Length: 234
Image 1 (cartoon, rainbow, N blue to C red):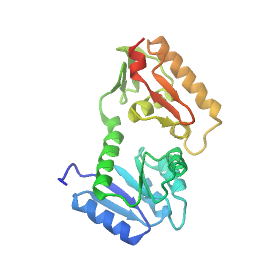
Image 2: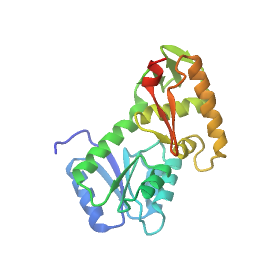
Image 3: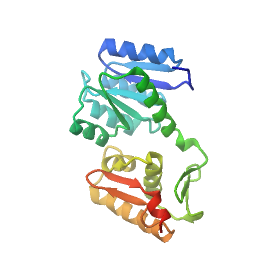
Image 4: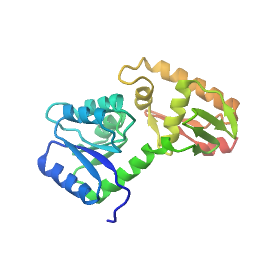
């Protein structure tokens, strides 16, 4: 595997053999790695440092990995991508992980080369916000100016509406769960789900006025996803 741009990774794993194998492999790619064997240390490091990706084991000695994920998402200096590593491979376990804020999920045992590829993909997605613009179909977002264009025309959005749209654009073509959107808006103390529905309704109305009435699709039992092809057909 050839060396690519160096990433900074936090490895949260209490099993010494697995932790050593992962850290040594990533160090071999000339990446910078920190290691935490407990959830408390992981939260402390993720809050203090800036990582490209957090590799998070679900089974930790002091805390549930889902609680660690939520804490990192709420307290980290930026929205760092979290890749969960676990032996739990049932769909229900994966659903809990994604609903808990995980950006990706890899079951043990895994190929270290695949782990590195997933880290790179997550890091690219997480760095989209530093670009001058982000485009999906007829939408163009200018994150630095917190402006949105639809078919080249400005769209008036609330702060919450812009954050929702930015999150959906960043995740495209994947869906974003309702819980992830609520966490993005309100952190660990979200209001009831009707508040999110109200923001989605208002955002859809503004996009419809701008000529993209169907671009935000609802994924039953999960959340929302951008559908640029639907907007192009209007």
